[in-house]
Image 1 (cartoon, rainbow over the protein chains, first blue to last red):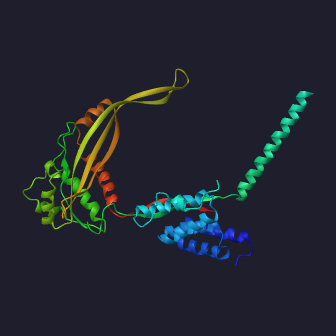
Image 2: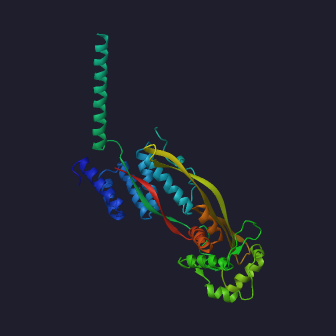
Amino acid sequence: MFRDTSQIEAYNRFAIRAAQAQLWNEAIFRWKQVINVDPDDAKAHNNLGVAYEAVGNMDEAIAAYERAAELEPGNKYYRLNYRRCRIHLRRSGRDGEDASQPDEELPPTEQ
Amino acid sequence: MQITKFLTASFRLASGAGKFGILLAVLTLCGCGNAVTRVSIPVKVQSEIDISRYSNFAILPFVVEKQTAHNEKLPEEIGEEIAAILRRGLARQKHFEVVSTQETARLLTGETVGEEWLSDTEHLSQLGEYFEVKGIIIGSFRFYSDNRPRRYYGERYSVQRQRYVMDYQDYMQKTYLLSLRVIIIDVETEQIIWDKAYRRSTAEAHTIGSFIFSQAGPQANIIRELGKRAVSEFTRQISPHYEREDRYLVN
């Protein structure tokens, strides 16, 4: 589907523009395609997590954030998104686990 | 000779730093490294009360807290007006049903809501059964103003000195404060399930002349405005609503 990495980058940028325009379903579609080609693309997993969270698909959002943090444990933005998502879940009473210490569930950072 | 060498070395160093700066700028422009885009997403915030249980309310007129000596002279109907603002606010939420102002007035005929009602949960619970609601909302408010002399520093052009000079102006700052206490009583268990105070303030600047007029002028509009703001926060807390939160997309 993608000939080189620059096409993946362009696809990601397009998806970000869609997300900025609040076209979350379009963004989800794009990032899913990026992940289909490169399942280890951490930023696509993170961005997909944000998009899932925006449409209220919380379980998949958490899974996507966790995957992103697993692939790139040192990235502070992935951890930040994940933490905020867990805090939101806890506040809304939908989180069965204790979200006050979400960092403990993530792989340790390399920083 | 020494000076020439030193100058040459300094120039080379500066030239190297310049090149490094240009390289850094090019890398940044090319998007090397993780560029981040901040987006705000809608996040659903749940009600702080059990809305499946407390689906309908009767709202009683709010009472003035009498023990406070600083209370301004307030019109009698202001407590009822605050209750009406709250009724309108809650009636807009699809999760709640509220007993109308006319119905409340009709059912409360002959009764005078006083400060002693705030602690009489048994009586309020009986009233709730009479209204056929799950929860009774009652509350009190305190309104007062605080006056302080202030000094505003600015600049003015001095013709004599031909330049701007520091200057100041004295004025009176009048701050109005409204403290609104909102209580929800569970009709079935006679328990207080919500008891929070909401404080709102607004300030205005006065000269001596306008300050004297403001002391004598009506303050009902200010209370209404502050009441709306306090009530809106309470309504937001007990209703599910959306807020926006930032997340980070990585380019």
